[in-house]
Length: 466
Image (cartoon, rainbow, N blue to C red):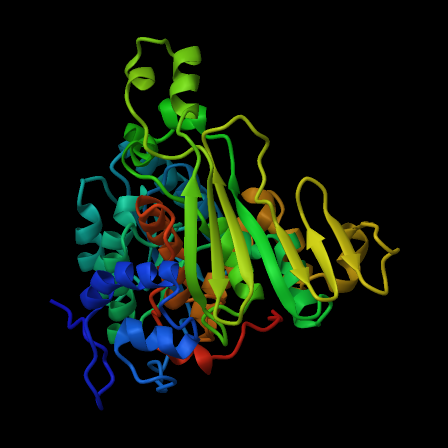
């Protein structure tokens, strides 16, 4: 069992379970107005620390890797895309493939062999990821499995001396988030949640503009994941229909990271700022039953079973610095895709959907939007300037290739990741806290501080040149 207490040697701290037990009580205090909302007071209440007590995170420096030897776990839809990306990136060897569907594993094995590389070893057993992590000589284990396996696969990788990376989300409970944070600190290995939308072209342009002060002091952001998944959930698109089971048993923002990841970078979360608390509420849950009745049959199991997941979930986050963030989750309604990207500052506002629009005070015509694409050349992120051509044809408009490229580049150079285990845990925690808030009639829920105070002195993400 891993020691769950605070790891600072000069004073004891409560374990993470004490935090989880008291989080609801702290949220109630917020709702009743009886708790001091200052950052110091909330940190003290959550972790038993004296206000502003400094904490240094473990040294994250590591030896550069000449070649990154990868084992893939889960090579269905998204996993296959990552295999294709890795085969195009210099300094990568795909050494092992693990998937419980033999056809998926064979497809990726064939892709590797057709690239001219040595064929990878294939694993197809239910828990073969454990054998792969233990037996294979790998630098990185990458998982693109159903959500419930993200934590177990990453844990196995870290425990066997491998770096770990996963598709979103990082875990399905706060306990799992804490365990991965503690394992990453104990081993000194990377434990990364691969949020591809942080590498979307528009979101990276906005980050560049934020760093150059275009929007002034930041005030508010909106984001989310609004994507009609009714047919995909209720048919065999997902192996064993695993995704719809979360809609049956859970109610909250189950998929916030595509929206919150880029916003967290704009707002310096875990690097001078932090999520403070959130409140969530949900609409009625009607969309899945309605679609099933109309497309499968009124007497079908899909139309007759119950679904807990609200069709629309709205979550409002307050940061320690004072900004607000509105996140929307909507996967059970008929609608065009959007991540509802918006950023408001004291000097202007920018949004992405349905069109890219911007207004900058003193530059734009008064009270009128401009086309944000007119600013692309001036504020293009240097990563996109360097990789635009290489990323063509890759998933999600090229951002999947760029996120994989940066993962490999950081491992090969030994430089820090663009986001790390603390970011993955904080962005994932939105899920569980939104569930807790809805279950408690929208009472505020305080965020755990996975950095244990170190967020105050960490440097914000810069504009990386490659």
